[in-house]
Length: 172
Image 1: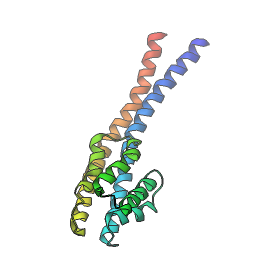
Image 2: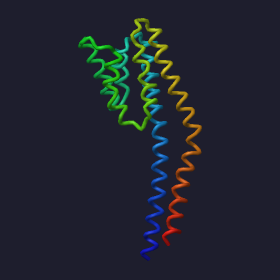
Image 3: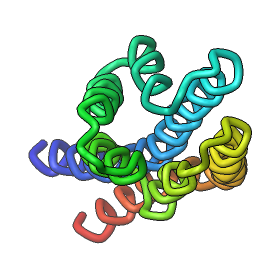
């Protein structure tokens, strides 16, 4: 009886570990899509609203949920104070905390923040191109991960289950 309960617990634990790993893989894709949506909204504000990047951040913040909404609002307020900081520096500082909470790799964060470093252009079209370049990088990463993740997710859950069964056989 006790062995059976222990075996079920081992199997459930290993299967749960495989499902957790699957969740991590899917979480990265979900986070990249969210960042891509933010870039699309910013590009729309610059393109159609003819807004500056700080104004675009304020307008986009109204459509997002925390923590990104608060970070984008604070970017606008800091830029309104006109302390002499560049938009790129303020954007990086304010977005560091929300980005750290997401299951992303460092190159994903840099791809998202890349457009801010190129935002010194006064021309709206150049700003728009910089945003679109970052957006294309994110879209390429999402597409690549989606192709890879279908098999990785299936394999993670399968290996978790098979590992649990192997442990049960070894310990039995």
